[in-house]
Image (cartoon, rainbow, N blue to C red):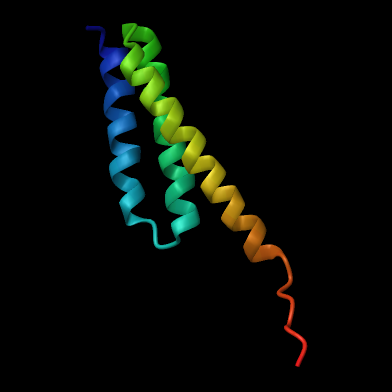
Length: 82
């Protein structure tokens, strides 16, 4: 295995592990999505479809969840009529 490939795998591992240091759930999901993208790249290089598919799911769900919660936080809250 090439040293560059090993660096990619370790970088993906480090980013994913580091995501648990994030205080905000939205940030955690964005960092996990980025780590999953690194894993997808790693999966393509080693031609591992389980890594590619599982991390595509993780990246998609983490991104959707992060940006969905960002949209709901930025929207003004509607007060209920009394």
